[in-house]
Image 1: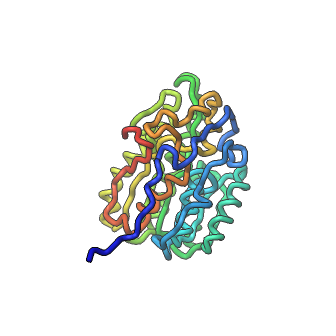
Image 2 (image 1 turned 90 degrees about the vertical axis):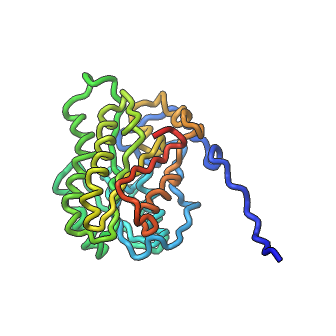
Image 3 (image 1 turned 120 degrees about the vertical axis):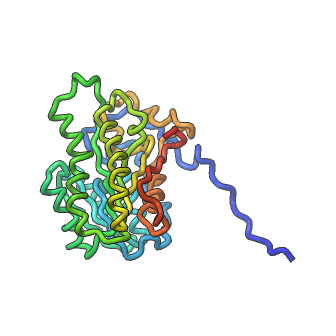
Length: 299
């Protein structure tokens, strides 16, 4: 007699599983806050279900107060990890909200205030996490800064330096100081972007840093692999976070993400599973990879 398997509900349509952003024109001062972002992004607060994939691990996430960083922090905590994350002073309300979500999952949250452009601060983070959480197993280098540009000739050295120090220098400083604290089995994940392979002229400096991050992952994977440490990148397409209304293109916000094959921008919650896979033992043979989460945009 053939065993009858329980029937399953049909898979949701990815075009409509999450709502169209349908955002009005809006502008914020960088780095932007969740409270001022309309509509509010979905970080998985009501939907992400953990399954113990990161039980016993400790993670550091840069820029974990909002957007992709908050979604990853929530997912990691619900998967069993303690989470430390960085934020800037103007992001305190967002940071407090992230702490509440992590603690509601029964895990320890450590919010570290500071500016990643400062070498001493960035370099101190791995040691701080080891002291406060007792170990360091996963590093997510996620914080980023972007601004819309009218042309190369309009960008000051100070502004160019801000992009590179936030998106590249800080990652180098953190990685350099983290290696003595990482043991075999550790995972490093960098948030790159589709901009690394499809650069926009209006984001040329941001795109430069995202392409460099891909090169960094591919260059370090052979070296770190000899120590049993994996390094990968996630390359998001358009994702609805406070970074978007703080980029300086309010007229483009209403149409953001509608040029993807799925016809909409992603919610941060949709990125979190990729980070969980790369951080978990289930991703034990994935290193040197760039995982595109782009809504169908070719990578």
